[in-house]
Image 1 (cartoon, helix red, strand yellow):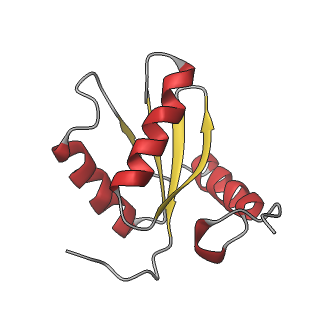
Image 2 (cartoon, one colour; image 1 turned 30 degrees about the vertical axis):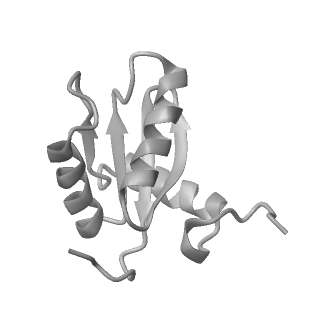
Image 3 (cartoon, rainbow, N blue to C red; image 1 turned 60 degrees about the vertical axis):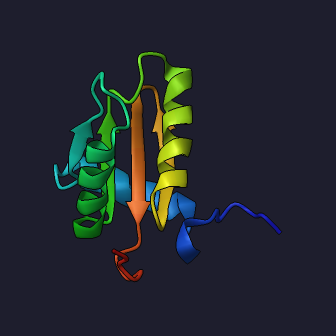
Length: 105
């Protein structure tokens, strides 16, 4: 198993990237800059709320070095319920949360 479909709660990773890219082009995908403070509890809380309201969210300026952006993406996925990393490109992370998943908290 482990084919090209990827995880994302049953959605195809390739189509998730395409959908997210289209939303980004249309300006319909919210984005947030991580900033120098990093993954603070208040940032994660804000991001969590954004992902409950929008299926896709972009984190810009996720790290000073491109390699670190992947580490930030892994940490966000670990910290947040039902969040998947669609892609990491340069300093930008695209996240997805299926809106049909039960909200906790």
